[in-house]
Length: 265
Ligand SMILES: Nc1ncnc2c1ncn2[C@@H]1O[C@H](COP(=O)(O)OP(=O)(O)OP(=O)(O)O)[C@@H](O)[C@H]1O
Image 1 (spheres, helix red, strand yellow):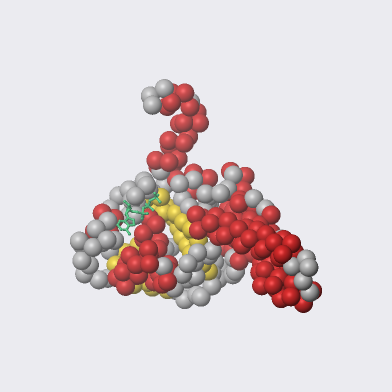
Image 2: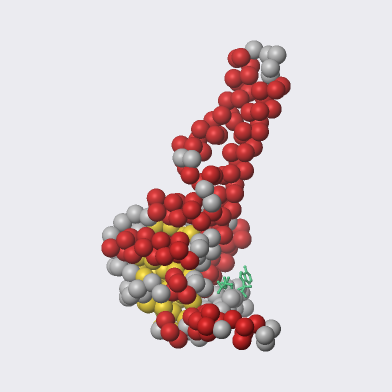
C-alpha cells in the first residue's frame, strides 16, 4: 500500500466550487485499505473532481494530457488539492493520472501530427523537384524529424492500432512497480474482452506493489477482485458491496430482459 488516507482539512469556502459539491460537504476522510479502490456513483456525483484533487495533491503526471498545474480548466483541482491532506505508507513518484478521454485525444493528436508531417513531405517533394537536394533536404528536415521522433517514442504502435489496442499497449508499457495509478473511467475505449485484459494488467501490477484508485461505470471493472468499492451516491462516501451497486443491478436486470426496460422508455 502506498496512499493510506485522504483527509479534507481546510475550513472550506462552501460557496466556491468544488466545495459546493454535496459529496464534499460532510466529507472528512477516505481510507485506502486495499491496493485497489473503486469509486462508483451517478453522473455528476463528484468522483472525477475528487480524483483530480488527489492527482493534483500527489503531483502525479497526467498520462496523455496537460499537467494539472498547467491546465487552466483544472484550477478547481489545485483548489481542492490545497484543502486535502494525503497520508502515505510509502510515498511514490511512480504512477500517473489517466483520463480515458485524454488518452483518446492524445492518440488523435499523434495521428494528426504524423499525417500533417507526411503531407508536408509530399508537398515539399513537389515544390522542390527542380531545386537542389540540399534545399529540399533542409525544407524536409523538421517534418522528417517529427516522424522519426513519433516513431522513436511510440514505435509503429499508437497511430496504426485502434484506440482500444493502443490504449492497452500504452497502459501496459507504462505501469511500473510501486506506482500509484489514478484512473478515470479506464473502460471507455475498451470492449468487454479488453476490459478483462485491463483487469489482468492491474492485478499483475498490484502483485508488484502498485496501487489503483479507479472511477468506473463498468460492472466488469467494478468486479476487480478484492477491491474496496466506495459509493459516491451517499454523503460522505460509503463502502458498498458489488451486488448492491445500482449499475450492477440495472445491467444485470437489463441483460436478463432488455425488452421489459425498453418498453417503458
Ligand atoms: N469547474 C467546474 N465548475 C463548476 N462545476 C463543475 C466544474 N467541473 C465540474 N462541475 C460540476 O460538478 C459536478 C461533479 O462533476 P464530476 O465530473 O466530478 O462528476 P462525476 O461523478 O465524475 O461524473 P461522471 O460520472 O459523469 O464523470 C457536476 O455536476 C459538474 O457539472
